[in-house]
Image 1 (spheres, rainbow, N blue to C red):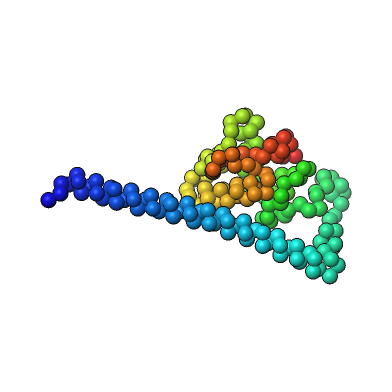
Image 2 (image 1 turned 45 degrees about the horizontal axis):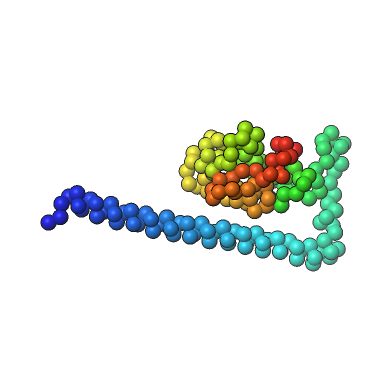
Length: 178
């Protein structure tokens, strides 16, 4: 008859094998999700391009939106192609202000800019959740990770090590997201 300690060790080993298997499956699913998300984003871009080409005026009306004169309101001119709140993240390019991003993305950039300014290095999504005063529960951490990965894909952030994010050099050189 096996001892109690022996039985506990068997159960512990079985549980450890199950945990390892589930972690491998989660990693595989996460990688598959990242590939699927990139593919989906490419299809969205392709559809927008086709819509622009097939527009009756060849897409020129979309490029020439009627924007009220911001100088009349005392504000600065916003780029014609700036993103609206809750819209997709535009690809970063020189001169593109952080204000084209929704507040969630701006918050991530601000936190990473503060880290960069203090020479503290990259942040993980769990650390970001703590910085934002959020509970570091998987759903919130994964939502931050999704946003950070999107910012990496669009050139706003870099991922020097898996799961660790920092501002891209060109974005960091802009002095705080003007």
